[in-house]
Image (cartoon, rainbow, N blue to C red; front, side):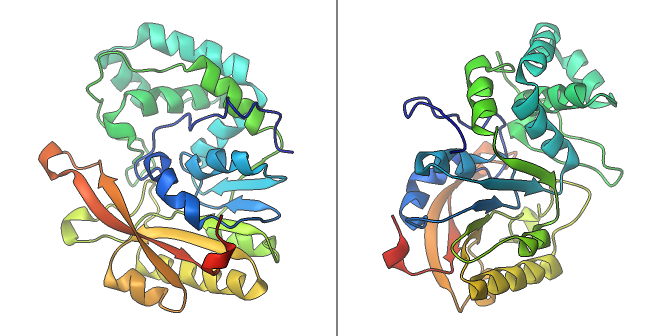
Length: 283
């Protein structure tokens, strides 16, 4: 088993993540495969689906992302959670507007300090948004929080336990083709295809995720499905995405739009779930 966590004490994502799936898990529940061997998540982000699937007693998980600092943070939570907690307590004590912007420009060489910095910035920046400029520098402004929960002791420890047997690597999404096999489960949560010219946020790093990348991802989805891998993908509800996955099962999910700077423009919007498997395989 991946962990020995009590069924009453499952961890939650320890990072806020724009587009994270914590609020959608209940809608996703009926679309997860009823059984599978290994679990792979190539766009890890906040990891909400991974943490939810612990209820299914995953035997093995490979969690990957192209964001090297994100992967460093997950590894530090897994391997050095108590040292990480001590550093987060220091950030919590010193937190202020000036301190935030000083940390935003700080370059850490130590992995634990890098992880603590990312969690600190994530918990205190605007809407938990991760965004880099063309130089790879984090450039999100400070959020308006009276008392941000920078060091969530119990959840970090639970997450550390859950991650003990997980393989956590910096990898591009195509690399799942090197290990995805029949009856495994792969969940893709890529940067969404923009629904309009004004919602064109397609990357949380310096590497853009454009139409060509969406097409490459579809090709990986197809190859995995042909192997008998159970594949599930989230994306925006657009004609482009519907056409890309027209040969698979497409479902509409009602989601909340939360990253618009104008609160009045936040609200419900449809997203898509695409699966390679039939409804009889759902739990």
